[in-house]
Amino acid sequence: SRLVGRLGQRDGYAAAHAAASAIYAADIARECGLDEGRCREVRLAALLMDVGLLWVPDEVLLVPEERLNSLGRRHLKEHPVAGEEILSDLPGLEGAARWVRWHHERPDGTGYPDRLKAAWTPQEARILAVASLYASLVLDGPSAPALQPGEARKVLVAEMGKAVDEGIARILLRLLATEDGSYASASDERFMFEGVTGLEGRGTVFTKSSWEQTTP
Image (cartoon, rainbow, N blue to C red; front, side, top):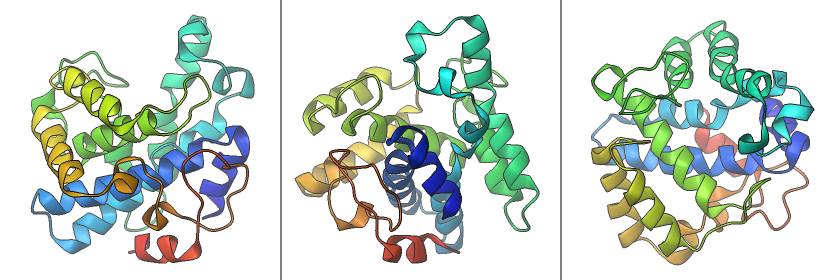
């Protein structure tokens, strides 16, 4: 909980993104037929997948990626490995640590840090990637305003098979079609988490109950 709060203090966005990603990831995992224990692991991995950003310098984290130089991009691309190192030391999170390492891999093999193609990327890591991408689209970010859910879905469709797994993305699209608008915009009580400040206007406020639901 403190780690997520620290993320939010860095740029006022990362903690909101973590909370939204965790909800979407757990729902996708459930639709994939994973058992409830594994769904909780996926949710916790999504909540903590960007914890490695705590070790990325402010001058990198707070600059839009397209404006970073090669050194800045290298720092940014190291955060999944840092996240894996942090989580792998915690009992019971060995699997989650591997998924965190690979949540920026892409089906076309151009992701990082290991350039894994779809067949080599665990399903759980592919779930994190889809949840993370969609959450980033519907929340106000440091370099881009939130998209309306309809526009975010179009972007998700355009990235299927390139940035994210097509099958996993279609599962999220089906979920979005059956839920209300607040779910699609990550703006209702399901996306809340207590104790994280600076998130006004980010589409989410946090309460303790969501953390308790997330904890295995």
